[in-house]
Amino acid sequence: MTASDGRRGDNVTTAIKAVIYDCDGVLFDSFEANFAFYTQIIERFGKPPLDRSDADTMRILHTYCNKDVLTYLFEGDDRMSDVRAFSSSIDYRKLFPLMVMEEGLRETLEALHGRVELAVCTNRATSMDMLLASFGLDRYFSCVMTAGRVQNPKPHPEPLFKVLEHYGITPREALFVGDSEVDRQAADAAGVPFVAYRGDMPALARIERHQELLSLL
Image 1 (cartoon, helix red, strand yellow):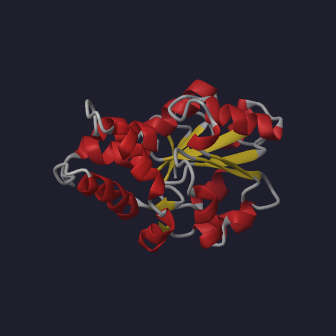
Image 2 (spheres, rainbow, N blue to C red):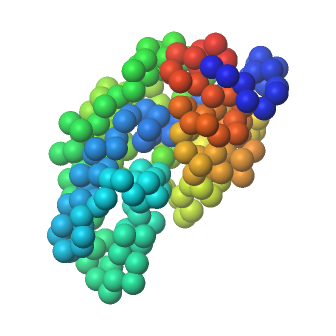
């Protein structure tokens, strides 16, 4: 774990009442599941195959909400209503076997459960509750904020504000653990201290393993 903004973590985190997690890239390695999901859509509408070497496209697939990803992939395409309808018809549960829970996550959640509130703030829209239940993680999280429950998904701060409102706490009483610029921008806009998970970004701290969060708290 590294502190990256010159502040002592123990001075900042003593009053933390909630830890908020992003999903993709933090709770789970979901790259293959997301790639398979959007590949189905691309193939259905005869678009060129997704290029794994295209860093910008892969980043967008993995961090933005479904609506924004489809807008990016089908920009200028007059079939957008059909694209969205087909996307909604895909049963994401069939892709759960491609999801890999991050090492040390369950042990860390077990250690934090009861000490602080635990929440998810994700740009997933409809699959999050089923995903947590499928992996037996739903009992840890008392608030699950998805793109489908807000008007403005991340990087807008609205999802984080809704989590704070749910708990009745201030931004400085929470930590947001994320892995992308989308997460960092949302945290900065909401005033919530940001912990970068395996990401080289400005943050209160950077962690490589979930258990390192316990030392920070």
